[in-house]
Image 1 (tube, protein in one colour):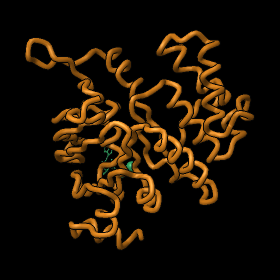
Image 2 (cartoon, rainbow, N blue to C red; image 1 turned 90 degrees about the vertical axis):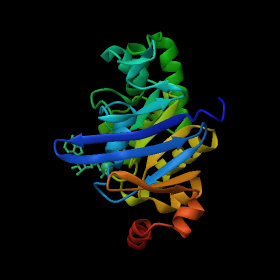
Image 3 (cartoon, rainbow, N blue to C red; image 1 turned 90 degrees about the horizontal axis):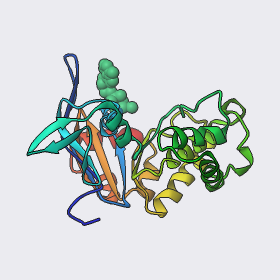
Image 4 (cartoon, rainbow, N blue to C red; image 1 turned 45 degrees about the horizontal axis):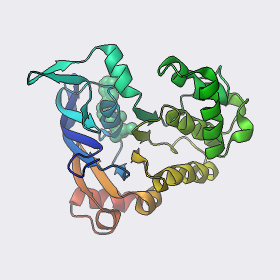
Length: 256
Ligand code: ADP
Ligand code: MG
């Protein structure tokens, strides 16, 4: 990929819910293989931004492109045309999403959770999908839990299954929305370790998190959002140790 085209490119994205303006012109660029950690107070629009990137929400203005491909639109004769739902679904398979509350299918085993989408969305042969799923469960340290149902797993184990499930679609990028916020403190580390391992192997990721230590250690860029805009973005040392903006300082003073 050329340096000129970021893997994730968000430009001027706006989104309102009724009268509430939640995203007020968000710009974000993440290069291939980089990790962006998004921090910010509750209600600042972090989840809405992630949901707009993978088109769970449709932006009112601005655009998002992943690996040079515009999300939700195609260009034809210089004009933009909205994609049909099934083309949006195809695009979404390239954008892995990991939710705060895991969102596993409760009636499927860990292995079946990983096999479902590759078979139904990508038309992979089941045998091949199962081999990939077992390798991914091994990668997140859960090779022995292939036959377990979500309710039989700890929160940390469920979240690791959810990460493996996102990887099963071979996404170009992974989006995490507060992946450790629903976990008991002693289970946070095992999930962050999996995300660190993905970062080390060059996965492009956006991680909304309150784990400042994790952001400092793993992120290439830290993004501070407040009031529906990116207030400040830069290397972790700059944003976390020497924030420029008073709102970033006020936020960090509360959480550090
Ligand atoms: P964050 O993740 O930073 O806490 P969110 O993106 O979840 O913030 O929410 C930003 C604001 O948008 C909040 O005020 C929230 O109540 C509102 N909001 C989010 N989703 C919806 C929705 N589907 N309908 C109406 N309001 C919403
Ligand atoms: Mg949120």
